[in-house]
Image (cartoon, one colour):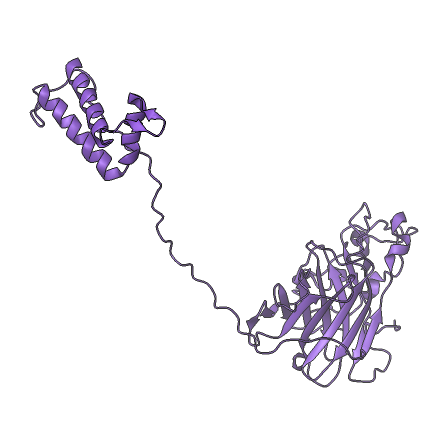
Length: 360
């Protein structure tokens, strides 16, 4: 069947030359035979023209060799196959994914220009950070000064809270958190507030925000949790108890990145005026007007709401200590965390409220 293949190749060549328009001339002179063939192929390189032309050429070759299609006669060589040109695939429209509708915000926080109503100060651990130690940690009373990594005691100034201001307005309450170092540009840390509405040492609401990346107010990665079963603090609120695995901490998610009964409940941004600060805003109506106690915290460790308070889940022996003379030094299982004592707003404290700054 060699003659069939020869005829086939000849017919294909003639066909291609014919498609080239029999014009072998170009701007630089006559084209070679190979160039003419390429020109013919290029001029007709569509799937339909190619397949139609090649099939006609193949049928001509078969007919010339005396083999009719469908006659059942077998060729001695493998049958000739038709090459399909590589074409750019047609892009099919994909299904539109089911997305949650964009949150329609009604109220937005503004600037913070008035003087603050209340504040807390916290230990600046940068002073002795090079030595891998700090002071101000009061583990038994739930004031944790641990902006260090576990065991090796690497200082984390972006976690080290030194002051927090609180400004309360009719619509918005603003917390301005100041750190020992500039706010990191990237990271996994979280910052937040704990609110004790009945001044009994048990936090009722916890507001947290991931490290903000924008100078504009936004609700991304901002959550508000509530402890409805009132087990935060264990048996002795603000005092550390033996580890109790039955405590579930803040178990109820009230707001998450704009989702909740009030899509405007809590916001965060980098402080546009201070590189070492971030601002959290929440609706004043969340806590009402009867007064409350509050504290601030930062966390780049467990970030586990079911482990609040940490000192009720880890003994001092396993938690470790940042004090150089302590038998529990260095920091171990409770690490990369900083929290303040509690200040107050809207009432006059008696002085014995659990966690109140200056009291024991």
